[in-house]
Structure formats: structure tokens, C-alpha cells
Image (cartoon, rainbow, N blue to C red; front, side, top):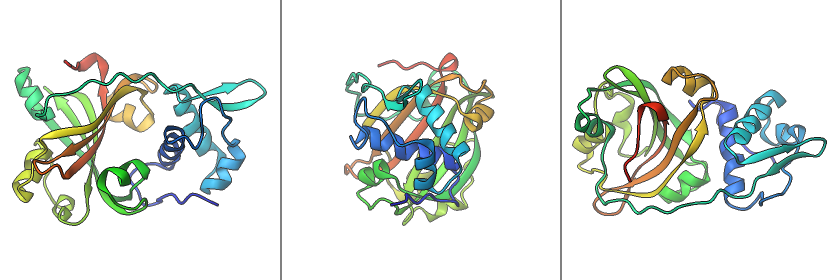
Length: 244
């Protein structure tokens, strides 16, 4: 059975393929040390060209999810060791982080589009996979220097205003909070790992393709413990640090 991709999504097809394969690794569909389908099989499964599949696989190899074995195929790596760090209940926006460090925050909207929820997003929001969400992508800067490429996912209902909102040089948490009355107060789940910059992220952050970046996937909850938004963020490690 094929896997439907969203041709209208702001996320490129290879990124969608990457997320599906990563999801299958993380949920055990492709267990550690198992061989994943061939490029040809994946191409047929997703209905895309082998170049698209190959790029997704190369990214996952770079991120440590897959490994290529000469003459044998592509295999799932042993799961990454996970260190659980309990955060404080308060959530700090990038805007507040900049001001706390004495730098001027900036934001440049890149895109705002409706996308189909993958398994991880669906689980967080309590919706069916394939349901629509609003994805807002922005470049965040500190004193004009690119630091963060942020992808924030929101429900569609009640957040229609995001399609028309002026999201330049502001905190999206503040904009959403002022319109809805809800603010993020807790992050759960929150996962931080290393990823390599693909062509699109590298262009926005003005770093070389393949540059190691901090990659944070994080769910934000409001005061009623209701999902507020979900973030998939790329930070330039040489320009940002985390105090845990």
C-alpha cells in the first residue's frame, strides 16, 4: 500500500519521506538492525522519484538513524541513547531569550500553509494522521544574525488568523496568545538532538549544507494542559547554547 504525501505542503517531498521513515524507525516498524526497503521499493511506496528517496535516506544516515552497508543495503542504526532532562515549567520564547542575553530579536516569515499531520503530530494534538494543521515557518535572528529556523504547527480551527497575521519581528507566542487568550506554559514532550542542515535550512540559516545543528522537537501546552502548538526547530550551534 502506498503512502500519500502532501504535494501542497510547504515541506519538500524528500522531507516528508524522511519524516515518515523516521517515524517508522521510532515506532518500531523498522526495528534496530533491520533492513529498510530498497530505493526502488520506497520510490513506489511514496510515488516519488528515486532521487527524492535517496536524499531522504542520505539525510537519515547523516542524522544517525540509518547506515549503509556495502553490497547489502540500508539498515536501521541502534537506537540513540536518550538522556531525560526535566525542564522547568516555564517556557521561554526566542524573543525573551534574545532580550535576556542583550540582543535584538528579529523574525522573517518564510511560509504559512496547511499540511497533513504525520503520526507524531497527530499523537500530540489527538487527531487522526493526515488531518490538517497550520504550519508557520520563520527565520529568527539575533542582532540580524540568523540563529533559528522555526517550524510551528497549530490546529486549523481557531487559528485561521495566522494565514493573514503580520508575523515579522515579533513573538508568535505573543501574537497567538493575544488572539486566543492561551499561552504556552509547559513543554512536553521535548527532545534535543543533532541534525545536519539540508539545502533549504542551510539557505535560510546561511550555513553550509551538512552543517551540524541542534534540532529540537517540542510540544507546548497551555495552562489547561491542552496542546498549544508543536515546534520543530533548527538552531545554529555556534550561535546558540542551552542551559539545562
